[in-house]
Image (cartoon, rainbow, N blue to C red; front, side):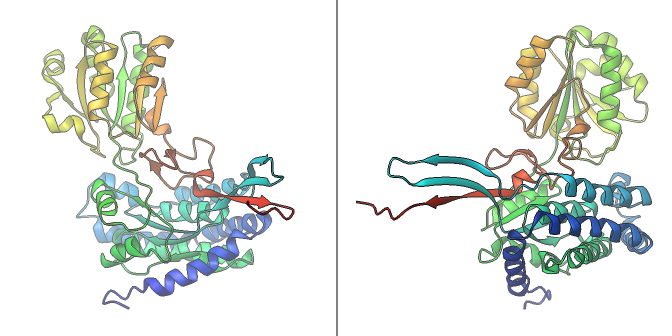
Length: 416
């Protein structure tokens, strides 16, 4: 036990034991636990709202409105959390399917089957619903989880975990399958990252500072989600009214989510028409343009070089002009964080070229970047958007929280 009161050995041993039991649990037991947890969230709404009020009040005067929006829980958002658990319960069980089967000349029969990863360490910041989504996805995929939420959401996280554990008990599953560290001490993060005897995978979800800390200090494997500097590119063959509608939604629906468009790239050939249309439609957004864009419409503020690589998470967007498709691709490739980028065009060939050339986890055509979400992809929920290229990429749902192993069946073979 260190001076933070955080004991990774105790939590880790409990999680390992729970993970073994959960890996062998039936689909019905896991689904029953999820639906019971959803019921617990609904029944516990007054308690959860009061806990969240404490969290919000503690930072209301110190954080921007976009941060408060991410932290805030409402009755509708709690209902959304409960509904997500029920949706996950309805999805196919990712554990156990036979991924491949083949016979060897010596008579061995080999199967590759999907199995849980084991124990997941989830480190996240202000968004309390992450705890519910991550716990539910891990439960259904047979993984135990240890949550370390941000200090700003500590009261909300505690109540969400209590609801998940109530569901586990109802389903006859070990409640240690979902645990929280119970401290906001920063040393808890360091210990989770070094707990190679207990943690099989760490997933950080938050700002670039948190993710880089995990990347640089982790001794256990990680699944990283870097910042979401997402682009929307308006091609010369775009339907401009459609483009305005898409970009307004992509930027302003919720400014604090990682799938929000932060950078707008516009073909120079249509800029004189489109930039004023954009400014007309988005008076509630601060548009920061390059030198040419500002000349077209003086409602745009002059951007700095840093603006084009910034994840604002606020009602701010950068605007730059491009000299056609190839120049736009180069611009996006230079500044994108590899999360989600979109092209708006009625030219299918241009769309195909952009979607092939842009090396991001998610690339969209004629759609808001805010669809970068596991729920919108039919996954029920997501544990994060992976921007790397190994193991999982894009929304991390049930399938991405499994590994596999080989089952080899023989009839007495020995190797010569």
